[in-house]
Picture 1 (tube, rainbow over the protein chains, first blue to last red):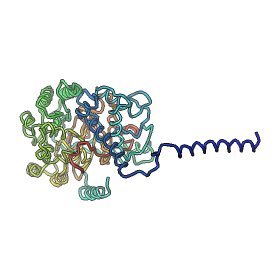
Picture 2: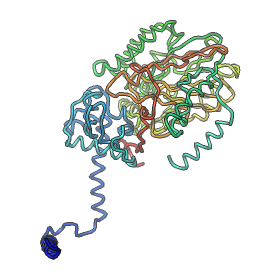
Picture 3: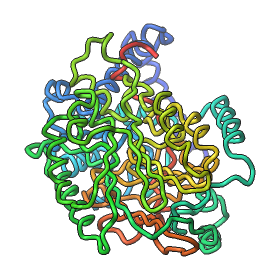
Picture 4: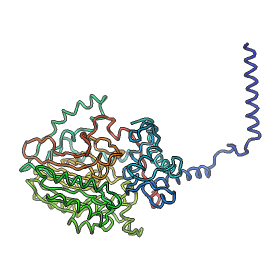
Length: 154
Length: 381
């Protein structure tokens, strides 16, 4: 292939890509990131997050009403997550994913949460993408805001 | 930690820890206990760091009781009713059997508080029943979990006064109540006794506030009880909470700890033995040394900041093994210049090595920055 034909090929492809992008801008969804984020929007996003943190905090501290509402049974021993992990200490969300000795496999934080529910707490495992799992994850990550990522750390 | 708090701590430390002032060794500390944490992690390599250990053994010095003896410590059993949780029951039963089997027997047992989890009559009676297995004299101090359901009523019926003193073979032993003087957070909020207890039972809760304290009345009592005691004779003080500021957000302190040390200042051989922290701890302030004890129920992680530099950390434990990271203690008190090998012996079930052997054994090896919880806030902080 000559230098000229290569150049023409690139030119043609660029035109096609340019046409698609142009069409997307002209005829795409009217609201697609056209306006700067407003303080109200920011607050709504933050509130949505903090509501999950709050629910996770309650679940983590063994609040029966929240567990019932979310349809989960995280413990049958009277133990709550926070009894071994005050302020989510020693959960180390920033060290996942990693080889988790107790689980005996390469694990995510969600795997470890379920291990704690099933083993020390003798509760019922929850779906990995369930609302309760997301709330617990939100609380644990939020509690560790500022902890530096060290994935894989024993 | 904020710069201001750090500055205040440095200032307090410089006042309380004068150069050259150290506790006399009224209760011996094994070299395993007494290793400087900053030496452990301050040196360039693990090999170099651990090479310091034998040198520090020379710090062990005996003290002067009239005759050698041992006593035992159990605390933080956190019993639920049997129908809910048998795991904690099994561990208290085991500790009681262990203590009873000591040969030669211990002179007495100290129970260091938090017998119950939620202060219920059934929980306290269950604990009392199990500990009847131990036939040697028993002395009890309360924990916050024993107290805040009925404000110490049942505990008092079972175990008597929470503050006491007795002399034994040349050592003055003192039991202090560090839990009952919490500021009233319940009346204005019209809490039920169960709600009051629930907030108190949450270590990282924000509602109960700085509840741990000795109180002016008890400080005066202590000063009075020590007034006739020779300044150079050994004193051992038992408390549920540590008598220094370790980590106030979890009430790993008493709020009037500076006042406690003002009272103890003239005495040169003071040892404070405490529970509450569910972990191995060692600290010195002025002429007082403090030793933290294991729980039988479950271990707590070291706080994200404030671990005393003199603490040699305990090993990180397996959360899948209920008998790991927990246990009880034998404490040897020896006469004259005799050096005992194990003066404070941590009996951690299922572990030969109670203390970390390398940096990887240390839970604090993965640094973390934590925030206080939000969901129990009753007003914006």
